[in-house]
Length: 330
Image (cartoon, rainbow, N blue to C red; front, side, top):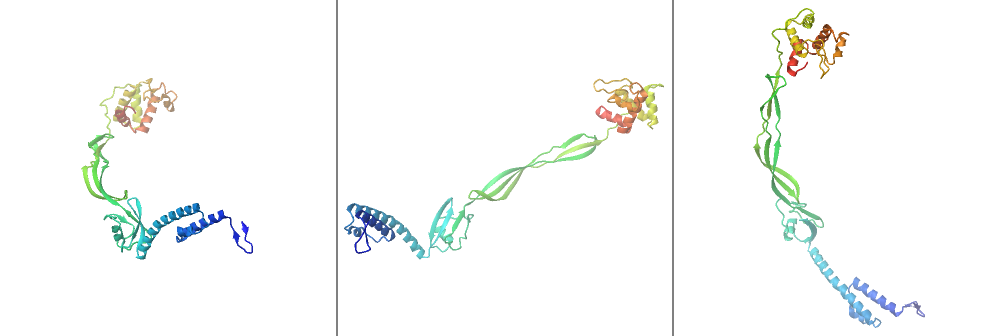
């Protein structure tokens, strides 16, 4: 670069001038589109190669600009006529709609969009077109769905004094109830939004189970007679000690039946499978030591302990005998 004598101007080398002119040309074309190729060609300082490049760039810019201007011009024309623009989201797609229709419903009709009677629209169809806003249409479908339900039966217990205590007897078998229900299910864009019951049919009626539960107390069968006893016999000792507790002949018959079954009134009766011992079959036998140290050999000591055990647990010998009759032990 050199300074021009006598002035303030700057002289650029020729290649730089070519480059600058081409750049200015491009800027002008982009800015106004007013320059033409003939104006560039009239400059004697621009080489032929630079001219060709400029022509090609100018034509390309003008071609793209023409399409852009056409679209812009169309939009400006519609807007000048009072047209409105909004974005429409429907059927998983989004479209730009430009319309001069008076209502949203008319605009959708012009765009070929059919709105079903149950479809949900984010703006009122009878209202003005929402300029610059987004309108969403959710497709609503209705289908009928049938589902089955099961109602479990209950169990009702009824006391029955004619049945032995604890015994259960089913008098009515239980049946689960089964019904089918039909619903009208509405879905918006595939998601359920509501359901309405339209019909119910009972296939099987529920029947509760009825069970009789026995409450009858077990009655001990008292032996009619007892074995003959002699003085000093364990039975005689047992009868006397029972009478001392206020238990008469009936209670002694129950006691005799109980201990006859357990040990046959043998002082040394030993059960090897359970370690029970003596006339009352105490388990273990050493429990009877609370009645005397001679518990292993003295029938009176064993009977005293046995009567105390019966009184504390069953109340009377007949109570103990009834339990033994029911479960096999006392």
